[in-house]
Image (cartoon, rainbow, N blue to C red; front, side, top):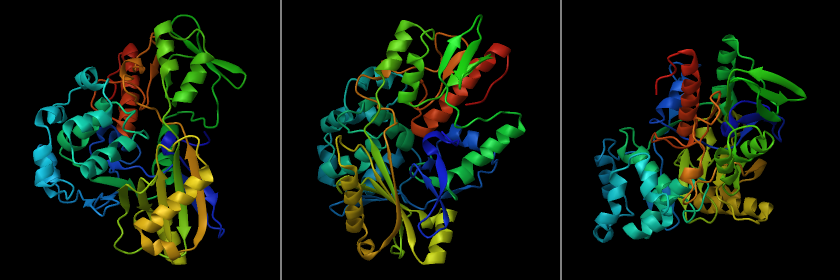
Length: 432
């Protein structure tokens, strides 16, 4: 890739009006219980001054029911109890119909035991067994499962239970989160890149690697662009397809079981990020981020000029607004232009004032590079360590015995990979 950031990358481009704007792969919430991710970002920004809080994270169902997290208690177990008590999707009859014995696993999540017990069950089947009311099923849990870009019928229930633990019962931070006050490159990755360069790191972007080979002793040779260089240690932090291609091109790497596990990994269905520059503002009452359910393929709506500096400046100059739409787990084969039009129509339904707005500019990012966490998939996922002592792995597809997911799993496995390698030199490594 041409820049740092991986699946949180962004890039500068020119808007239809000639202004310089930044496009990205879409909104990400920086939850406050992402301790290791925040530790990483503090390397370049010790006070995390680039992160600003959003006051709420509302979830709206097409029926009109809306859940809010602004007033939910943050201390477990009152966080989960408070959510159920305050949520319009949980009536007393609904709560009475919940099967307590089936729901008990929500309150006792341990890693890796949760995978041993529930990796063979789908998220959909688990929620059916608990008998959650349908609206709560859609709002409180399907939103989580679709954060993994997958259909609940395919997602491992263990991942859903882990998410519930992280956000409700495993921390006191609750479901409120922060967002960067400028696009990802300017706020996060360019400062981190400069920090690394000051330490003497040679940061190379746009530099494909062809293969990795054991080269005597514990050294590894990295073949890239027609040259081969020996290194003391290598960390593979790749998406599923890139990892599979590299391992296939590196026949001397790992053993048969490790290579088979890599080959068995799957990529989640495609997703769409549409960023729209509108000629008029959305209503002042609209939140910065809204999770949606029941609106066809639309999973959430962000109003970027509520917090992102670049969008704020554009909106002030033009009198318009910058809106971002996400559609996860798009079925294949789908007419992509039709999906883009559908998301726009669904925005008009969610925020009716946008129906009369002219789209000054639009950018659509289609991607299909997120890992799938399917039923019975945990044991085949690669771990941080590998059969080669100088080779480790990192990323959100990597298996770990810590209760982390998504960006936090990527950051955590990165620290674990570094710690595993640093022990070879007697170095203390990074606290987790």
